[in-house]
Length: 164
Image (cartoon, rainbow, N blue to C red; front, side, top):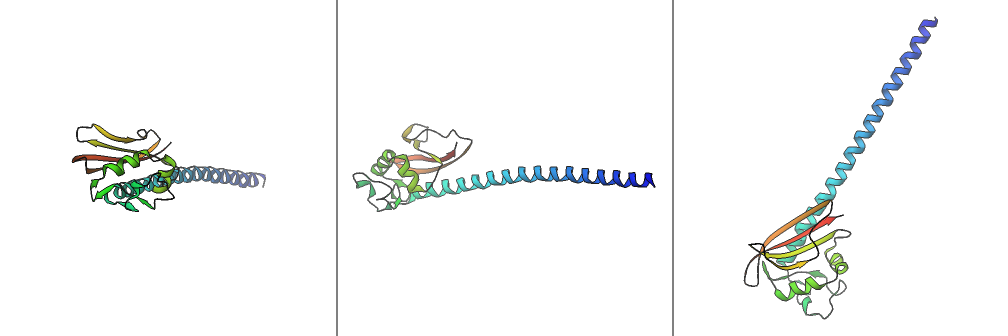
């Protein structure tokens, strides 16, 4: 009788130990995949925002369409920012005004929250015509490039978002 009771206790102990080990493995795996999923969702959100913003900047005039003529434009006076004279052709005046806007206003106008942003226009050889902020340096960065007409020639407009 003693031996049978000891066997039941040992079986119970082994079963509980295996169950606890499996639960620990399951918890670690769940945590790992939830972090990966969260990072992937954030990255996908950044890709979408970067694409939409570069689309907006290169294809829209903005609302109001003459926002660049305002003496001190802010996120309160501009509903939608756009740099185009016409689709794919950027206005020199709008680009220069955009370059000088405060970062907080641009972040609010573009609805990018806590992400940092970078904007530049280069020629096809890489010569920089306009640059705003420093190039991405965070742990997570997304860059979008568009071919546009600026100052009479083909240029590459880059817009990037990143998170430090």
